[in-house]
Structures are given as C-alpha cells and as structure tokens.
Length: 96
Image (cartoon, rainbow, N blue to C red):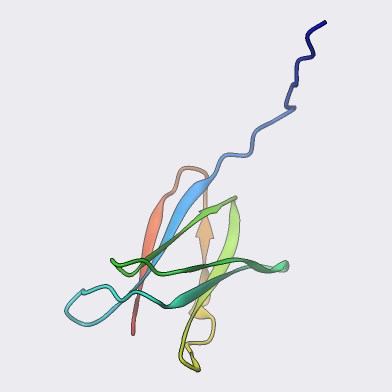
C-alpha cells in the first residue's frame, strides 16, 4: 500500500537579501544579520557571505533587519520596516 502525503496549501515565499556594504558598493563578509517579523520577534539570522549578502526566504508580512559585528549593532532597520509580498524579491543594502 502506498501512502500519499497531501499538503493543504503551500505558502509562497519571497527572497529577501540584506547586503552589508560600503559607500563604494563593496560587500563585507562576516556580519550577522537578524530578521524580525512584525509581532513575532526574531524570524531568523544569517552571516553575510563574501559578497556581503545574507539571504532569507520570507512569507508575506512586515519585517525589519539588524546588522551586527564585533560589538556593533545597527538597531532595527529601516525605521518604518518593509513589507514582503509573495514573489516580491528585494535587496536592502546596509552601509557598514
């Protein structure tokens, strides 16, 4: 007998990238980026790669990010937050 797994629904995701860079648009690795979901606290975290990017797959909703390194903490950015819609991939650059 074969069992079949059926999913009632699949939540579409959007790719959100936070880049830690400088004024010359050069990315910086080794920064910890935290993503916060409105009302739910920290959604997840990731380290920036060699290009300065940290990638998150997010469901629809409002978010903010925070960048940290060597005791530095940017605080939650951007001040008003940002909204994610399904398939609405976006990149935010934090100048470190």
